[in-house]
Image 1 (cartoon, one colour):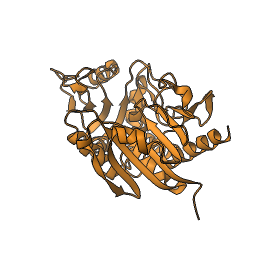
Image 2 (tube, helix red, strand yellow; image 1 turned 90 degrees about the vertical axis):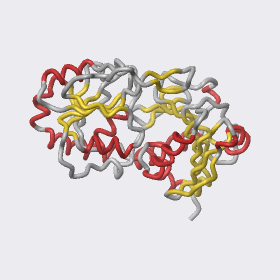
Image 3 (tube, rainbow, N blue to C red; image 1 turned 120 degrees about the vertical axis):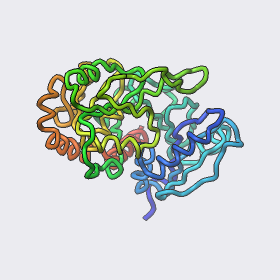
Length: 333
């Protein structure tokens, strides 16, 4: 039976590095593993489209790569000018992430933004601008909240002996006071840290590694930035409880790390700036870090509950269904 839509073109973003190879290799590995939300969403959308094309654009034609079929999805690195002259127009639905582009006129055009306060220039030209909130509804004009999901099979916890009592994942601008407080409150317990790879230098378009560790405490093991999601999952699987830190609450939903904690079966404690939306962050998935004593006593039971909730609510299948409802709503206008 023919599907309602023939072709979806998803533009994940642009790789503008002078030497893009390593980054493109990592992205392709994550795509093969279906380990990030873009790849898992595309796989879940296959039942709605005859063909799905997953693109990354590069500013130099020499860095383009031939298409490869993985999980029934065509993956390709394309020259940016080819993207704007061909791929954006030769489809039924064009879905663009992160990079600001002038949307095509004919296909349904969707733009993804992580926050309802972040919209692209000329946002009114897009049929829908998605922001990750808890419900699948229209917020204002063409801005829609979208349930972002993950591949629950990839983040499925393995039966690995726990090496760390806590784990924290974050970036340089996160507020880490609660992590330091927990490390000092429980000096005998071990904390794993993933991330904090340095401040982003806009001029150089790259992360600059910090001169000193982010925490530098004896009971915190710092793994640094792990771009391979499989390695991140390995550290999470070796931990009992997650620690969620924010940039003083100035973030959209879902906060990627919190969703991955839940998918991996980690109940998390969070800082006082955490935005509690009742969907991604609630009593089933986490609690304020002042409750850490109670969480430590019941981490296994709490972790199982968080995992069960995440599989029901945060899967890429749920995300794909929400995405299609928004497309249907846009087409009726």
